[in-house]
Every structure is written in structure tokens, then in C-alpha cells.
Image (cartoon, rainbow, N blue to C red):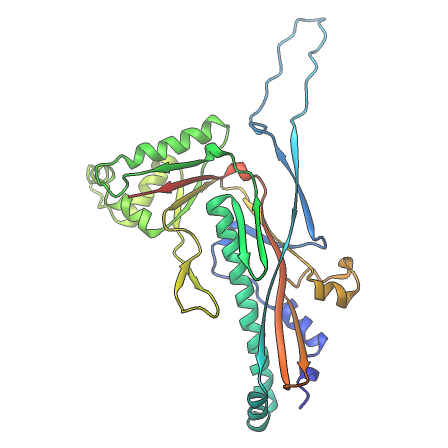
Length: 334
């Protein structure tokens, strides 16, 4: 059976177009997926305090109105980056599959490989999302890429707090400091991403435990997070999801660092911007002909000697904060 007849262009496009790209990853809710026909993206960022409303002046009757000025923007250009993964089917495996599987099972086997590739691409997307959320930057050092995209988060939006493992430390004062910093810039904080470890510091904190006890509440995780929300209007969520590196030793790694808290408003924080891959542009003869419903492009080809069929999933992607300075990052140490 000619596997490339099964894995024809139309079949792969239908599979990719109809694939459910929603995941359980937190980044899905923070960086809304969107595909455009551009490799580059440009964003206008307000200059410092450009979000703070400016006042008009009172004027005497018959006096000329003062001349105002428009808010200044800085213009930033970013390039989306390529992610790809391929899988081979060896001569021996192909022989055994053709000899022992009915056609329907063979088709399932082949598309299972594409499903693996799709999931791995989306997992790499999530890691990029969480790196931007926890650092304000995207740093990539893998597969002949050595690059850093700095979204230029203000230095004052990166803070550090120590002593959180000490039950007598005032975690409430640290949270108030972050909220006060945001308020002073005309911003608000409505949600925060962190780890279960950081949240456990809160549940063991004497000041928080005693405050809850004074109203006959036990310091369970839910009660503590409800208390923080009541005090500061911030919804905390723990992101403890992990991934592993293909070809590694099965060691797990966190998407979101264990010692960070990322604070945001409750408006849309960013876009997860996809673009056509080089293979896709070649196939459809130009960026403008690309299918915006296909976030991951699928491809299959044959190698003559040895006789191997390759499958590959690829995407061009960039996480883009819409307003990087709506982000406040705290590094927590014991």
C-alpha cells in the first residue's frame, strides 16, 4: 500500500483544519490563539504612564484653549519563530504494519503519529507562553536557534521577596506592595499565576492563619485564596504542569517556575500568534493563500534508501503580550 496516497495533501489539511487545538494548558487562556498571514508582527506600546489619564485645564471664558498632546507610542517589531517535529517509520515497521493491519488500522496508526507531533508542537507553544509570562522575555537555545526576544518589561515591575517560608513573615505586606505599585501607575491586578509551593507558604503563614481563625475559618487552600481575593481582589491559580524533553532521560520540567508569581489585570493579556510555515507557503504559493484555521502544518514524504516514510508537524509561532507593562513579576524565596 502506498502510504503517501493515504497521507495526501487534502487528507492532511482536513485533519489539521479540524483538529481540536484547545488544550488544558493555562497559556490557552492567557494567550489567545490566532493565525495571521504575516511572519512579522508590529505592536504599538504606550510610553511610560501612557495609560494614566491626563487632565484638561479649566479656562477663563473668552480665553484660548491650551494645546494638548497625543499619548506617545513606541513601535516594536517582532518575528515569529519556527517549531517542528518529525517521526520516521522504518522499513521493518512498515513491512510488519502493511502485512498485519487492515487498512483502517493502518490509517489510524499513521495519523496517531501526526497527533503526537501536534501535541508536541502545542507543548512547545505552552513553554514559550509561560516563559514570557514568568520573565517578560522569550529565550530559545535549541536546534540551531540562539535568540532572545525582550518585550521590555519595566525593571520596576520585577520584584523579589524573601522569607515567605517563615510563618511570621508578612506576606500580606508584600502583596500590598505589589498592588500599591500597580495602583500608582493607574493599573489594576486581578489575577496571579504561581505554584502550589508558593501558595503553601500562604496557608502556613501565621498572620493569614490567625486572621482566618478570628472569623472561625480554617486555613485550607481554598479559604486562604478566598481571603486573598477578598483583601486584594486577586484570583490566584497554581500552574504545576510539567513536560519532558524528547530524547532526554524522562526528567520532568516545569512550564512555570516554582518560585514566581505573575500578576495581571483581567483583560486579555496577549495573543498566541501563528503564521504559515515555509512548507505551507511553498504549497499554497504565498502567505496570503494560507489557511488561517490550520495552526500546525502537517507533511509526509518518502525516503528511498532506506525506505522510510516521514511525517512532520510544524508551526510558526510567537507569544505576544498586548501590553507588557500590565505584567508584574515577583520572585519568591524561602
